[in-house]
Length: 342
Image (cartoon, rainbow, N blue to C red; front, side, top):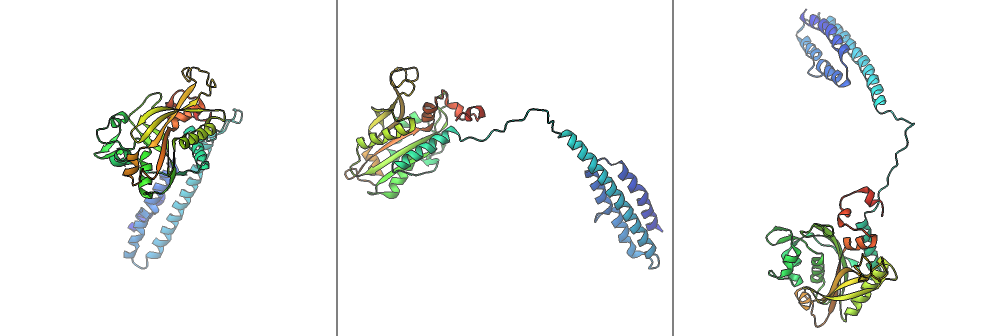
């Protein structure tokens, strides 16, 4: 009978094929090709429906014997191959206990994250809250609402990244202040800081196209420059040391009037003059000023009723001074030898 011959052929050929296989994947592929739903043995069994009823028992018995023979051969080969592969894997991954151990390095908080967290804790202790905003801003929030009209030279000085007309990667976190003022106006008191990433087209030892800022805003009745100086003095002493002093130098920012640059006494020489402070005894840390009346008006506040001050600092600048880092780019190269020092 044709089916009997096919079954005997399988019982001779398949064990021979199994014997020469050298990996488990090939063995599984052969199993599917013979015993699977579309396998050779399955195809033979489907032909039993056309047999004479008297022949079916003999063919069925032989088919079961062939199936058992093939399954046993497959199982034996799989056991042998698995054992061989395990030995090979153990030899490759064997641990040499005579070698010195490898030190496991634990993660560290990045120095910039450390400065942001520390500054945030300081200002929270002074009664501030934290506000956040989008990093993609409209020109209105990033410039115009901060008293920087389209042709103002400050726009060129900041050298912005434009995404499309009217939209820019924010060059400062000041837009967050505008959003908060517009949400709370007309006369609601404000006392916030806004930490976050900002973007400008700069890249050298002291500048990066992406960097971090922390800006602060206070608006209320009777707010003065004296309040601003006292807040910044407390911040400087908690950040850099209780013996530090600050000074305010007249400056210009379009969104504050009057404006000032803030210096902190040099921690390297104690104010006597050294290489770090270029002999002056002072190191610049941030800019600040009283909120410009136009900025108050554009956000719904009446400058005749309330006043306010704002300040902004670069986190990288603070970190470089606090940790005595000479190149801002160290913060971004992801070198563990640098990070683990903090």
